[in-house]
Image (cartoon, rainbow, N blue to C red):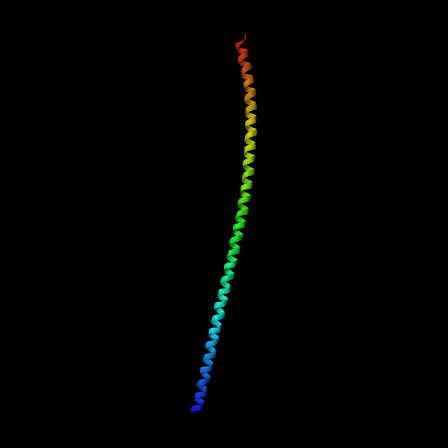
Length: 106
């Protein structure tokens, strides 16, 4: 009977050691999976940051281009308006000189 108890005890110890080994193996696998997941998450984050930087740069270039086009359009409109005003001023100057001359000369 004592031998049978000893055998049961040895079987229990072996099973416990087997379970401990399996738990340790599972913990190692879990740690490895966590490490892999963290590396993948870091890679994805880096890719996202690069994409954001690229999109931001592209948008900034587009905005600058649009801003330059608007600036050129406003400048062109202002130059056209200034030319019209100058033309009107020249015409009015000629009329004013003519009126003054008419009044001054009998």
